[in-house]
Length: 250
Image (cartoon, rainbow, N blue to C red; front, side, top):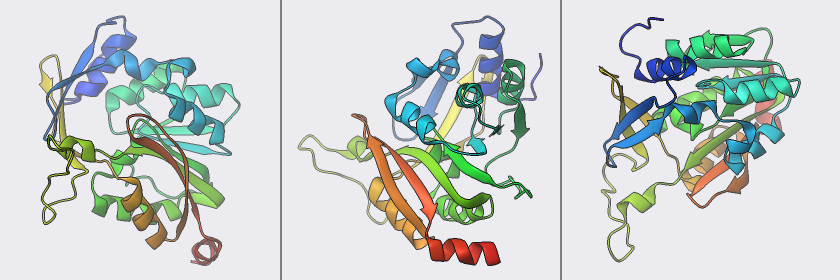
C-alpha cells in the first residue's frame, strides 16, 4: 500500500499492520540523542499503556475527539466501552491503519484544521505527551482558543505533557539554559524510517507551571490528575463558567 512521501511514521505503522513486527522509527531531536521508536508501541493494548493513559481513558466522557490518533489504540479502547470517538492524525498512513483496525470515525487533519461542527465534543483527548501537538507556546495559546469552538457545554480537554528541564541539568543538578532564548520545552523533531526522512516538526513539552499560566489566561480551570516518575503529568482543562457562557453566546 503506497503512502505519499514523506510519511515515515505512517509507513512504519502500515508495515507493522501488515506483519513486519520489527518495524522501528528513528527519532531525531535537537535536545537528545537519536532514539528508536518501535511501531509496536502504537498498537499497545490497554494493559500495556502507562497508568496515566489508562486514567485518562477512565476520565473520558461523551463524544470524544482523539487528537493525534496514531494507530488508534485509544480510540479502539473507547469504542469498546461504548463511546462515540472521532480520531484525527496528520499521517495518511496512520489514518489508513486506524480505518483498517476498525476506528469508525477517522480524518486526515492537524489539530488546527479541525472545524467546529454542529455536534461539539465533550472530550478532547491528547495522549502520548499529546499536548506536544500544539508545537510551541504560541501554538498552545492558539489551540486553547480553537478548543473553545470545539467543546460542548461542560466539555473538557484531557492531555499529557512533561517537564524536560532535567535535560538541562549540570553535574551539580543546577539548570543551565538561556533564559533569553526560546522556551526550553519547545523541541524540534525529525522521524526516519526505512529510506524516508520526514520534515522537521515542533513539539511542545510544557512544564506544569507554564501550562497552568497559559490555560488560566485563556479562561480554563486546571486540574492535575496524576504524574509519573518520568515527570509526565495528566491535566484536565475545563472552561470557567463565565468564559463558557461568553463562548456559548459568541
